[in-house]
Image (cartoon, rainbow, N blue to C red):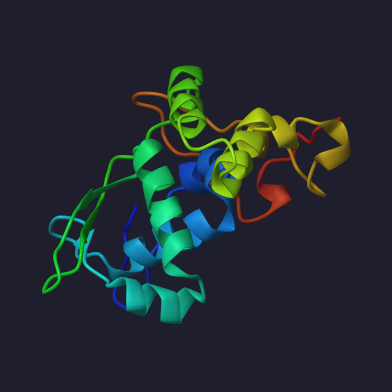
Length: 176
């Protein structure tokens, strides 16, 4: 979500913790660009495909595929433009990657043509999905100096977004 001060923007932790494994780097780059370009009033932007392609170095097909995926994940809404006006991209409230939503995304990906490389990629990402907290809880993948408070990423309605402490010394209870 865009909570920027002048000359900066931010991306919500859920985008990286839950959605990056599904959207991949192209989807994350697109979403980040939309956050960067959106206005504060309605969290909307309207970059054209030529600008997106020139800036991110990805082609129109990749942009289209990943825009579709971002919509399936309920991260953006797109109002189609025409020859004279580009699409309008609206940032949406970020949902958790719940089993029901992941099943819906899987079902939509399965409807793509079987030979579609994008279909295969998305289905592979979904089949191997683990959010960041699940990865962190794997003992071999714990970040150096991680502690229980860092691993507790509260989610759900009314939960605050976990922030990483400035230093491990702030929270001496380390993970054994």
